[in-house]
Structures are given as C-alpha cells and as structure tokens.
Amino acid sequence: MNLRLDPPPVPPLDPARRAQLRKRVMDKSRPLGHRPARRWIAPAVGAVAVAGVVAGTLVITNRPPADPGVAGPATAATPTGLEVVPDAEATAAFAKSCERRTQPKLFRPLTVVWARRVPAANPRTTEILMIVKGTGGSGVATCVAPSGAGGWDRDPSSINLPTVKQGVVGVTGGISSAATGSRMWMLYRARPEIARIESRLVWKGTASPWQPGHVDSGYAYADNRLTVAVPASTVRQEVRAYDAQGRLLPLVPR
Image (cartoon, rainbow, N blue to C red; front, top):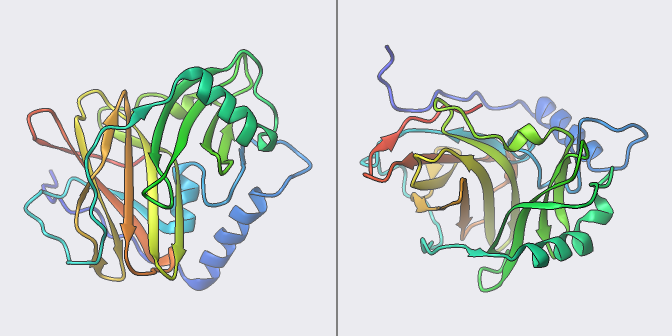
C-alpha cells in the first residue's frame, strides 16, 4: 500500500505539445460543420479536461493540512455561503446570455440543476453560474451569466455523482490573467460526505496559501486569485476535501 499523501508528479508539457493542445481547444471554440459529443462556448470555460489544458494541470490531492506549501501571493478569501438563484431567474439568464451560443439547442422544458451567485472577475460584483439540463436527449449545459461563457455536453452523466474513490470531479471552470493578477475557478461535483474543500494554485515551484471553497448541494466551488500575473500554461489548481468531522478525505482525479 502506498501511504504517500503527496499527489503524483505531473511532467510538464513541452512547448510543441502545449501549442498543439491550445490549438485544439481554440478550434473547439469555433463553429464546426459536425456535432461532436461536447461543444464549447468559450475556450476558457468547459469541462475539467479542457481547463487543465488551458491552465496547465488540475491536481486533486489529499495533502495533510499541516503542509504549509510554499508561500505565494494571494488575495484573501472568505468562506461565506453562495446565494441560490431562483429557477425562473436562472432560466431567463441562460436564454439571454448563453443559449444563443449552445449548439444544438436544449429542448424545453429546461431543468435548472444548480444555480448560484458567485464572485465575478471583479470580486465586488457577482455573476450567475449554473447547470441547466434539457429535455430528452438534448444534453446538459453550463452557463456563466451575463458573460455568456459556458459549455454543452450531449451526455448528462457528465454531472453524475463521483465514486467514493474519486470524491470530486470537475464540471466546468475558467482561468484569466491580467497585469493586475491571475484567477482560476472550478466547479466540482462532490460526494455527500464532503463538507468542506480548500484549494490553491501552484506554478513553477511556488504555491499560494490554501483558501476555503464552498460546498453547496452536491457541488463544490473553488476560486483562487493571485495579486501577480502568472502565465496560464504554468498554473495548476490543487484541491483537498474534509468531512463534517474535519477529517481529510482521499481524492483521486478522474
């Protein structure tokens, strides 16, 4: 039995492979003549696999809380609850901001699976992050309103409950970098035994402090912000989870 708690090392992508993957992501963000199983509305937002390509690497870890990591610059995060968005408001926001970019269209009636107000790029403002399911085989979509970013998946199982071994699986996320700093956020599907999560960003041997996330109705939201600009290709997000008694839970990425 391997008792190591550190996540396995992830070899860095060489420049040619990184360029190839970035081109593939950008190609998927443009209209295509065929309909793949998954279509992206914006290259910076999509399933966890795509976010990993854009952002570097996603790492889910069960690193013990005593590990301080490497001190890195980060903005403070407050573990407040997320405000529930009424179904009618979420549906209207989806139709206005995201549906015009979703191909094929979701069949009516729509079901709002999860919708919350989350901090926007400017943390003093909010935006609506939602998961909307269509009728029949029209699939499931994610949406960030009012920006219109999001994605569509033909297979609704993309939001199924993770296995006990996995603990959490990524649903959607995004990354941005500007002169004033960098940000990476992710929404995960989380098992019922997970009561709390923490996340941090790691890049080039440096790590930001662990920051509290939000666990809400079977989903977990992590939003990490840095006060320095970090190239998206060098950043990865680490996540760890705890049960209601504060015990660290093992997580294995899918």
